[in-house]
Length: 115
Image 1 (cartoon, one colour):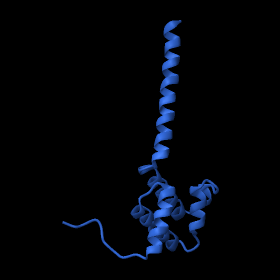
Image 2: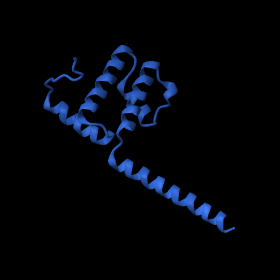
Image 3: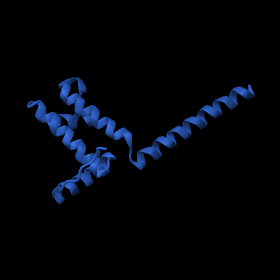
Image 4: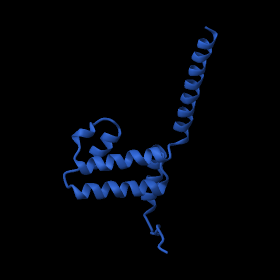
């Protein structure tokens, strides 16, 4: 049986930077390092692609249509990572929106029933 994980040693500064960035993007530290690795691999595959262009697209400052295919792949990977396990604050806000929507819809039904 093959193991899907490997252990390796990384510089403390890299791990700390990944931990900080992971907190902002809602990823685990390991997922952040994997994300950076995928971005790096995509950038190296297309020498004219830049991590900054991918970051700009993820931030909504650059239209995805302006990116090359390999850059778009990196953007979609980043978006999937963000939606797999959103930070608690985002989950709470979405739950609040869902609750308000349910109440608004229920209120509309109550008004129809009365009429």
